[in-house]
Length: 251
Picture 1 (tube, rainbow, N blue to C red):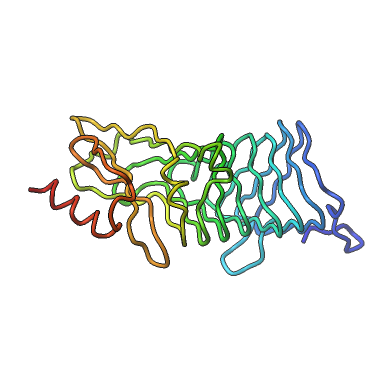
Picture 2: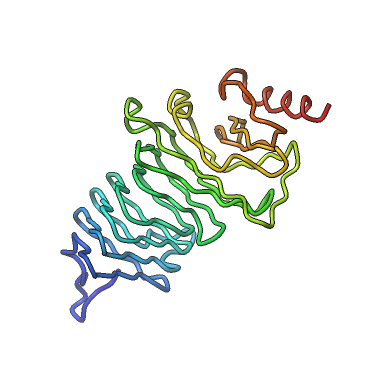
């Protein structure tokens, strides 16, 4: 923890990062807060190598973490909340882990370029939320990994958007399969409600989103097909659908 000369947590009463304010945790330093934390527009929270694997979270919040604006940047670090992380507005980027429920209502961009964003808990997709995935190759791409369930925060309002960015280094071939999300469980109606952009590829090819099997749960996989397919994402069993799709494309 960060302490003063008397051994007292120097940030014990911190509950808000206001406009123009910046809090940076670096080089293994950890901060535990006994109340909720709100990040206002124009505020910034940077966590740079704030926690190593197997150690406590760089930032631990008893209650909710609410980001109403500003920036939060992960660098192989961890935030733990006993309540929920409400990402309502602003910027959230980098590679790291959130322990607790994550509610995405803004633009989540894993990695600075290519990286992984992990949620050890449930992931709720807000209608105004988006996730942006950079694809640089079959193994060089962004990933969001959720240990719990994936569902819409309010299905009646929508389930947000997934934005796919193909980088110039990736030359898609029919049959390529790229996993961009993994999750322990999912709500099928919620995933059907997600909108997509960036699925078009050169030479008439197309990314088709499919649900496939993954260790400990399921995955959202982008499969390269020669043209848009008119079919439901959940029409057939995931593994069989993927296998049949690849055989059809290759024939």
